[in-house]
Image 1 (cartoon, rainbow, N blue to C red):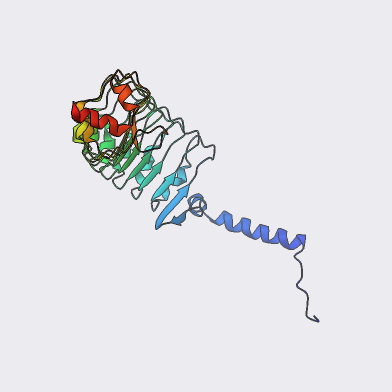
Image 2: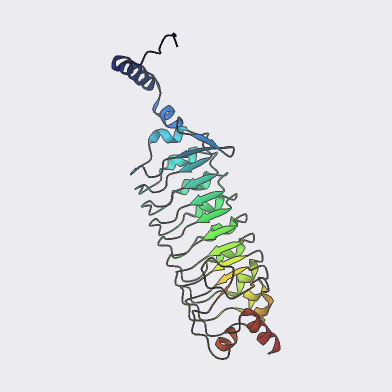
Length: 292
């Protein structure tokens, strides 16, 4: 009351501010313009360029050497430039949902990388140099066109989660059995006909998903993975189970929902008497196996 009213900005004022902001923008380098979009999340310097319709990352991106998490997902990238090796502080690299047919060999120079998402691309192979990323803990190569992995990935001994589902893999790659810290292995929807006895090397495994393959039988050594909480072998060609299967006592029930812990096996051509015994639940199966 009685005081001066604040003056509303005129269109002339707005244009003047706009010109000042534009002038400021012109003084910034291209890398600075990108850097403005870097945010801090949980102590990490993060940049997301997802869903930008890019066919190639901007050249200035590789000047942001402080980046720790980079999201380039859901674009139209057909390659990753070798300049990615400049981002030595990267901990997480997200490339999923692009059109990549390969990963650059220099990816092995990202020594701090812990998480690599490269699923939903068109990868036909993986560079041997990826085995040099020895800090990797999570690797997803699902929904590609892979037939195997290079032996050099045996060096990924810190890997805890590996997703190879929806590829063209005929057998679990030998290097996987050297990944002794794996707790999660997803190999569904491939062309597997068996699970090798070497599976016993993965003693820390808690989740093994191998549904929708052509597996004919389960190896006895699978029953030595006593930390398994979820074993999904549905939609295979399994007719029987190993007598030692009752040792998997952390599989608490017969499961049906894909995300449920327990044993997923009912969608197989199981023979009598196993099929009838399983009608009584998982404990009924275990009791039967112990008695026989």
